[in-house]
Length: 122
Image (cartoon, rainbow, N blue to C red; front, side, top):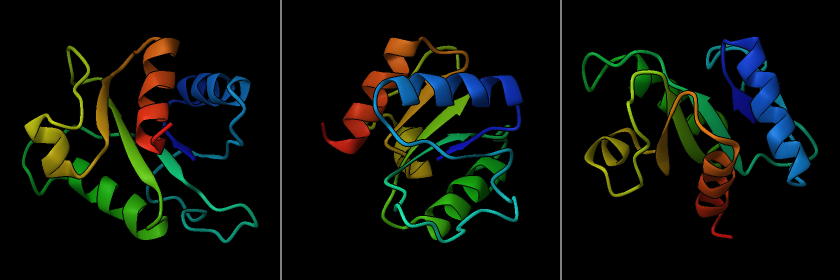
């Protein structure tokens, strides 16, 4: 599942993941009506564009919790324009948010594919 308000970024990420053999669905927002919609294929990963985070209890935390509630079995990879570089699972903010990793936006295709593979344990 790719959740990103930027339609061009959503399409690009979806294309990159599809070319790697992933079945991809997408939504424009973490609070979209389709979030959590029952689909025959389970969601095992969410690539989530994170809103600007001013506080620990802010919009990014809310977005991650909404994705985790909708897809409890899925790993979450956060992506944010607020980062100057990508951060792994060991970074404090990754742990606080509960994401597998945080990618700087924009990121390279290779960086995204590696983060997805790591999050899925491949």
